Every structure is written in structure tokens, then in C-alpha cells.
Length: 294
Image 1 (cartoon, one colour):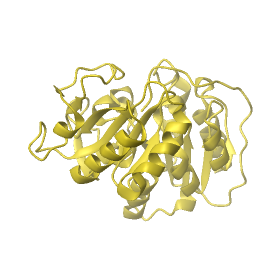
Image 2 (spheres, rainbow, N blue to C red):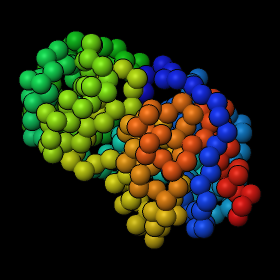
Image 3 (cartoon, one colour):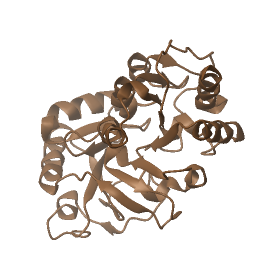
Image 4 (spheres, rainbow, N blue to C red):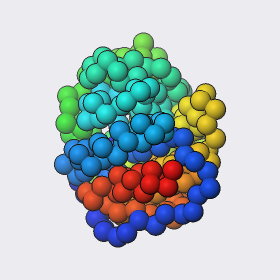
């Protein structure tokens, strides 16, 4: 999940690794990848996605966004209508449209683990503030900045929000968000992973020091692997696209993977290929070339 900021934009020709296996599924991140910086899906990209589906290749949107933020692509879900949201914490059926989505699979963050992560990170990085993302609700601490253009359902310390009898207690916790006002984003991610250890999975997709903390083993890659296994699709038959650290595992797992021209250095290192920036329709460029070879 990203804020409305650009990271960097670079224009270069796509690098297309040789592939002897016909792709069966395209897995693409949204912000900074499929979406342009104005959060639109370009006509060229819409046409490329439709052409892929027509060729028998499934398209999965795999994002850090919560389900309620999926209206930007709800008109382009095609066929199965499923999306992986919350960095793998949920598989959502978008057929009902905004506000009417259905959770198909939930991989929750246990409240005990979430409380441990908050406590460990409070000690390791004083000044960190938190928000809690649940299946339908969003809660935050009073000092958590207005990053997400929405009104929280409740304001309270994270320890109260995550208590067994806290607000939203009947809903699973999908992830917690941890924001620090002054630490370098990459340094904050490294520090947090060391502090939290195996109590939770920590990643980031924002250009600011905003971390996303999910259940142990929960990532875009692990949930995508589950969805592919249900369809009898191997990782070699998957083509993935991404731009930020929360995409690294997915790009490493997929048989073919592309870092966007505007991608974080860790993403470029993880991917097997590179395409042009999101504003230059980098996903569409690769899909068009891929379909020409089928």
C-alpha cells in the first residue's frame, strides 16, 4: 500500500528473459506497477489485460491495498474476479463491486503476535505509531498521521485496539501498519525485521517509513502460491510484476518476473527481467510482447 507519492520514474526498454514455458497466470501489483501515478488504468493496459484473458491467461491483482480500495480495478477483474489483498492476508471476490466484496480466504495476524510485534517495535524504534487493518474496519492510534484518506473507525492505543475485547474484536486482523516520522524507510524495515523476528512478517510498499506487518509466513508470494496450487498452476507458469519491497518474494517465486522502471533497487535485484515505468505502461508492454510469442 502506497501513499500518493512517486518513488522515481525511469524509462528504458523492457528486458525479456527467454522463456520456454507458456504462461498461465499473470500476477501484478497495482500501485506503482499496473496503475499510473494518478491511480488510473490506461486504455493500453486495459486492452492488454483483456487480451491476456482472451488468450486463456488468468490475471490476478496482488496488492497491499485493503479490499475496500479495489474500486480502481473492479471493472477489469474478468473471469474469476479474485484479487489478493493486504499483502497476501486476504483473497477477495470483487464481482460484487465496491462495498460488496466477499472474502474467499483470510490469513489473519493473531492478536497475540500483533501485540508482541507492537511491543518489540516500540522498544526498538521509539516514536513509532500504529494503525490496525481488519477485514472491514480500520483503527488507529491518535498520533498516527492521516496517510490513507479515510476516517478511522476508532482512535486508541494499539494495545487497546488489539485487545481480545477491543473494538472490532469480532473481525480478523489482517495487518498492522507502523509509521515512524524520521527513520529512513529501508533502515526502519531492517530494524523492524530484526526486532520482530518470526513473530510476524514485515515489509513495506510506501516511499515513507511506513511498515506493513502481517502474520508469520503471510506474503504476496505465499498466498499466490496457494491460489496457483488450487488451479494446478506451477510457479514456472506465472509471470509477475512489481515495484516495491513487498513484491520481492513474489518476483523471486514466479517463473518470469519484471521490475518496473521505477522500482526499488531490491526489486530490480529480485526480478528476472525489467520493463519500463508504470507511467509508460510497463506491464502492458511485456504482456503485448508475451502474447506475440504464443
